[in-house]
Image (cartoon, rainbow, N blue to C red):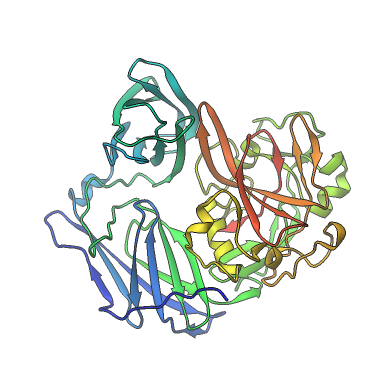
Length: 445
């Protein structure tokens, strides 16, 4: 049985200490089951950016975040700027933010104090504030992070007081914050901290169900946890896009396309998919019939439409997006019977979960009877992928889906993906070179 969190009663309003220059956000929560009100027993709020959480007791659950710092007018950063990493000194990992006035190339170079280049990352970033996670390697005490945009360069100094990780430094893109940044914050409850731009995972509980999603609140917001599942998304049973019609499926608070996306002009591998204003796709073994069966296979940059913004629309229909790693974590926690939404196991790479794979896989089409039970209507099919330098792989053996999240190892950008296999009851989280081609499922904004 999945472990359902025990909600400890306490006052339903959580208030951050009142300070001068604060900006208050009020978050309210209700439950819904296919347009019918459903009372929640509690809500858990996890701050993914800062690694802390708090629990609210229902009814009348209202989370009030009084964010301390500068006046509201000053939250909008002007010009190209970099916010110093926090924490600094760093013991294992630290975060910094970049404010970009308009979309363009951004170069990030990490060097040691002697000037040796450890990481070089080039990304096309849109207007807004972008967050990055940096994990220093063992041995280094001082790292210089140089960020360049349109000929301007900003530098921050990262002090390492921990042991550092074995191997290379790692730089991970954490997400986009739509031109809003926050300088300071104070705790809501002892141990719970929040700044504007932080990504929250919100989990609603009933007596026997849980539902969740991730969001970055920038203003007052009313959240509705959807408890319905294995039904078409309420009000959106189908989506017609680029001449094809897709079914939708509601999995608690997430609305997914039920089929792999199949959009674009077919080209044959090994010809590369290019940034040419034309969506290009591969079909398994270069056979058009396989695209009709499994959907298209896309190199990561083609899938993302040449942006690095996590959660971008990419090649998905308007109003939909390429799911992030956190979006997949929510799905996995929602459908696994052993580990719930927000369980730390979903952040790990490699094999995770108990029966999440079986619950997502279709009931037919997998090799040697390795089918699933399709408990939530996602009907995940196999279909393989194209591996540059290795050719076609998977077929009826595997399904591997790209996410819009990635990590930077050295000078290489590696997107995260999810894998399901005819042999597994679980799922696998991995990252690999962006030149390989995989399918994608789109998620409603």
